[in-house]
Image 1 (tube, one colour):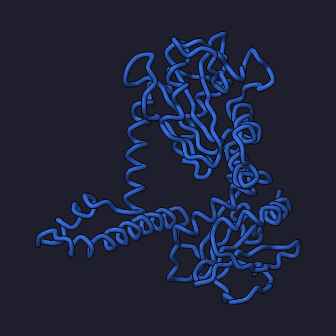
Image 2: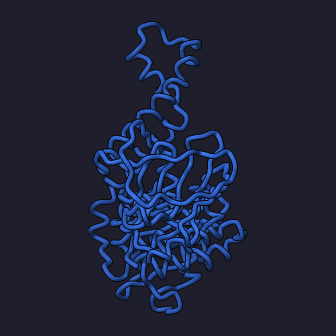
Image 3: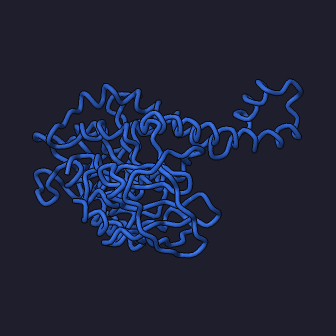
Length: 360
């Protein structure tokens, strides 16, 4: 597997196993050590490369340990501190990393709970770890724009200078994106005021704030959906595929084997895109990512191997109040199972992988 596929495979592992991981030690064994070995490419069983429970005396703090130190070409280059997977990462968790950063040659520090990895360096002051990360990798929602930057830290192509030169831009772009994402989820007063002032000429009173807050949130979501639709239409061209009848119960039906006439009124939603990424993350262990394609129809969203309508992996029936995941057997007969949330797709990982294997 290439680097992106290995990241995707680890993402799937985290999603499938996180519910059974309760302690920090379990998170290290199940997720952090595989990250160090399969993603960064270091031998976790070679103490000349990966030093567990790394100790360096720091002032009056004697005998403190950081969970892992990575040695590259004879120098400690990366420090890693781990926390429990169910614990949100907070600045105080990085206290030992702050202290160790100034007494080692390390220029990169990583704070992680096994699913979220925060990467730090010393942009603000030399040899002093920054208070905020320059890069945040969330294995639950991998940002494809960051994959190449993480790859620069792998043993094979370790390129510290390159990543440090891009770190400042990564830091601020990442922070701005996270602020924007928060505003789209729950717009703050100043965000609501900004847009309200451009469409409403009256005073920004409490009543107007309450009126426009949901309107700004709704407009933001619609804007994102429309941009996604435009990109998909540009990528897919004008060809679309006819829909079938959505059932309110679990049903089975034979997949249509031929390309069907174009249909109008197709709208691809963000939820369908998220569902596609979940299925793709699950089946990438059986098929290369570039072989996993999607096509939208009026009443279902198809996930296919090789962009071939005769190689169905799954269908997402998300256009009704009750959502269904369409699964396929060896005869290409679809069975729809009701789901209430996207997370439930992971419960059918084995079935999805078995289907994908048939097209490997």
